Amino acid sequence: MKTLVELSPELHQQLYVVPHSGAKNAAKQNLVNLRVTEVAKAACSMAIFFVRDNQTGQQVLTGFTSFEQGNNLFVTDSQWQGSYPPTSLQTFPFYLMQSPDNPQQYTIGIDADDSALSAESGQAIFEQDGSASLYLSNIKNLIEADMHNDMLTQRFSQKISELGLMKYITIVVNHQDGLPQNLTGLITINEEKLQQLDSETLAELNKLGYLSPLYAMLMSLYQLNSLIQLHNKTLAGNKISNIKLEVSKS
Image (tube, rainbow, N blue to C red):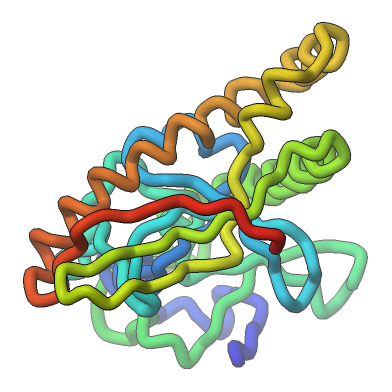
């Protein structure tokens, strides 16, 4: 478990961020966190699903990067290969945390023991005078925007859940060796129920800016075909013949 400490020039002026840390951290994640504001861009290269966070019970918006746990087909040689790098990759290894001086406020935190941080070389976090580097200033802007986008994502999730638009599915992966694999716990949009919404509800969703990400999530399912090709090219010893999406209860 990570132990976060508040980032400060007094303690961390000599620290650097190792290049490509975000991609390296994501290399073993077959799901990467997204915000609703990122869906349209991310859907151009990956399938997007909700998954339930077992700790909070909330639905978390994610990009699907591999059919196998502990693998990310969008990372090659520690570099992100997708057309859009999620904010969670761009801001790593920095985190939003409660201020130790005032629990009502937030600040930037790091795990000082993370291998993404170096005392020797990399991207400078602070300037020699202790001021924030341009790199850190950009990270702060991203994290501040991400905090707002996280709230927007929660509202989006709550609204489509209230409307019954969430649909649990299982991806049945059929390998060429004949052994099937079931990937469960994925939530997509119920297209049939979306089409059955009355004009007033559709107008409300459009006004909230929700229709675009809803349709983008549906269209993103076709990216699973590209992911099969990428899987078979990268993991040739365990090729996939085909996949099937089945509706599940949860």
